[in-house]
Structures are given as structure tokens and as C-alpha cells.
Length: 85
Image (cartoon, rainbow, N blue to C red; front, side):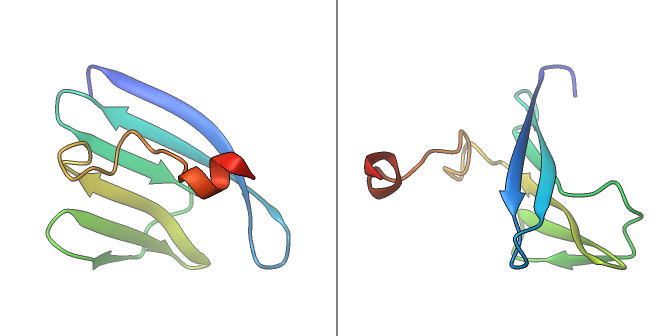
């Protein structure tokens, strides 16, 4: 991943616990990786040809999106409703 862009963000889960996530985007390969934990991936689930979810023993560990920009999934943008809130 030569031209990588990295961002760190936070989310709250159902129990209102803070979850740190790391996003990496490879511009040359058009691959978006969203990492929720650095735990060992024990199972992969394919959600179509370009989206893969890596599962850890505790839940979702990462999401990988191939051709993210081409699919309109990167850059991430807030909807008009969220921007107005």
C-alpha cells in the first residue's frame, strides 16, 4: 500500500463502550480497510465480491472493501440529515 491514508475514529457500541477504529485507504489499489481490533482473524465472511468481514473470537475485527472509491464507498460522507443535526 504505497499511497495510504490513515485515519483513527471512535464509535460507541450497543453497551455505550468506546470502540477505536483505524481506517486505511490505498489509493493505487482502491482498497479500504476498517480495523476495529487487532485481534486474530479466525473467520472471513464475504458480503459480495468486493466486501470481506474478518471475524475475531469477539466479533468483527475488520472490514475490507475492494474498489472502494469505484463503488462509491470512499471517501466516507455524512448524509445531509446527519450534517444538519
